[in-house]
Amino acid sequence: MGETGKLALVVGGSRGIGRAIVARLAAAGFDIWLSYRGNHGAAQEARAAVEACGRSCRLLAFDLSDRAATRAALEPLLQSCCPEVLVFNAGIARDNLLAFMTDEEWDAVLRTNLDGFFNVVKPVIFEMIRRKSGRVVVISSLSGQVGQAGQVNYSAAKAGLIGAARALAREVGRKNIFVNVVSPGVIETEMTAELPKDQILPLIPLHRFGTAEEVASVVHFLCAEPAMYIHGQVIGVNGGMAV
Image 1 (cartoon, one colour):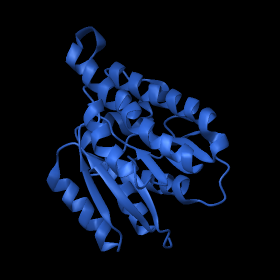
Image 2 (image 1 turned 30 degrees about the horizontal axis):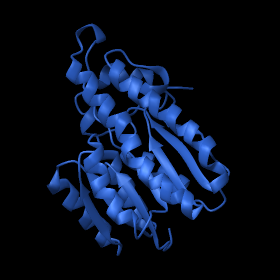
Image 3 (image 1 turned 45 degrees about the horizontal axis):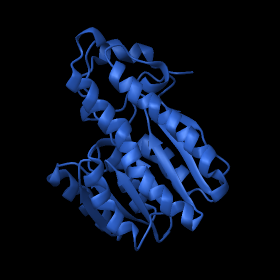
Image 4 (image 1 turned 180 degrees about the horizontal axis):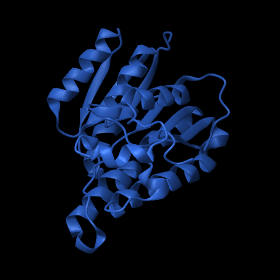
């Protein structure tokens, strides 16, 4: 991991997988723009880890489901500087069986996980096109590839991200902008802390949950590897759950 002197915008970078991505990219020499919604303490801890690597970290607190707030946070910065890398990692879950799912549970997940992609990526990709270079990595989920009972809203949003990323890859490839998807399986984070391990582990050929650092290593490769011919792909990090 050398000094790149590049800038990465990591959306949802204060906790879990996002925080591991931030740490990995900072160690590889990236300065960081770190967006988060409201956990200021976690964001400050993530910034301290970046600065311990000798890199800078700008914290951006906004609700990415709010289009106006997202653009108000990003567009002034993009007027003078555009990140070489964008990692879209934001996501929330509101699990319930569809028959009992509330309007709020559906709307909240789709607005954050899918509308948030549009709200963030549109202004950034415009600047990448002008510069004719960039890398976009979208964090989806195994749920978006195979579906999960009790996660119709989450699966729909994560599958939508895969479709959006593949379409975007066709649009911007000629501008030397790489777009790929990383699709984690069951990863040890706050979101999976209460899952019944005894029921899930038999479904995983590696017979363990993954770590956030294992996801971050794949993201780092897609962001920093110079010999790059991977574009429009979905890379699973799931221990073999989807073979």
